[in-house]
Length: 134
Image 1 (spheres, rainbow, N blue to C red):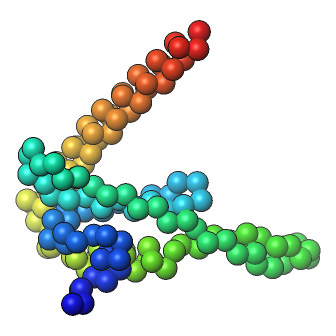
Image 2 (cartoon, one colour):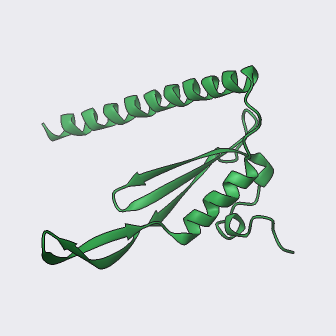
Image 3 (cartoon, helix red, strand yellow):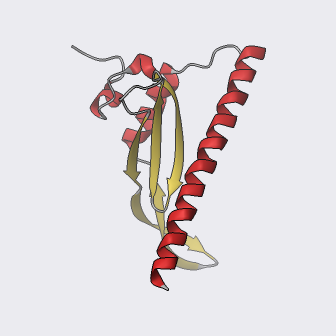
């Protein structure tokens, strides 16, 4: 049985029809891909999965102001690139209309509220740790 999305399958993603969106960010020397799922309220299944891809390093000679130096270049993982292609195919953007714009706005507001809750919790945790050190 071959999957239409072999890279995503290798990463352990099986619920292709439940994927709602994904995000990609860079942390230090790694790329972090987060895949979000549509879940019913009260579902015990996770709402997202996070994958970290280390960036490959290569020393490359680069001529700079008539001196020969070696610079470290970092490259994205080929697995990550293929996963992004498959996710893009899976979540092909539908024609933008007012409802789509409204959904995007609601999703952005929900993301913002979630980020605020996470930051408040983290700040409270850090304050507790500081108090414990006094």
